[in-house]
Length: 133
Image (cartoon, rainbow, N blue to C red):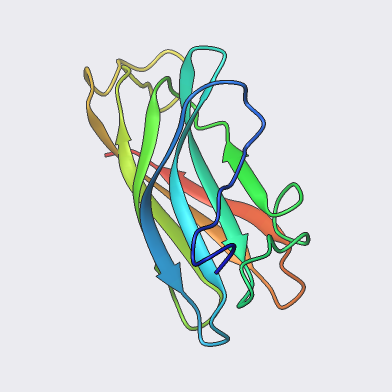
């Protein structure tokens, strides 16, 4: 992948970025997850690479995706692909969350957080769920 087996991915945030997990699908496309600093707030981040190491332009925004998880400081540490095309990102967040307006917060972080993305053959990404216990 990439130049001499190394691929640098810029999420364009102007801040810190780090990878933490990886998954490979049946077509040998690679999905990398981690976190990116956007204006001082950490967000889930993911990138999709084809077998040659190029970003898959149909995934997210030109091959990268930054999720605005409804909390502050959310880090994706693991990626898992399911055969039907779902991509799960699991991680942690460090902010009190409320399930609905008016309900008590779920507690202070870190909280477990999971995002499920739907990746179809064209590479379109739709956020289909988010959960914090």
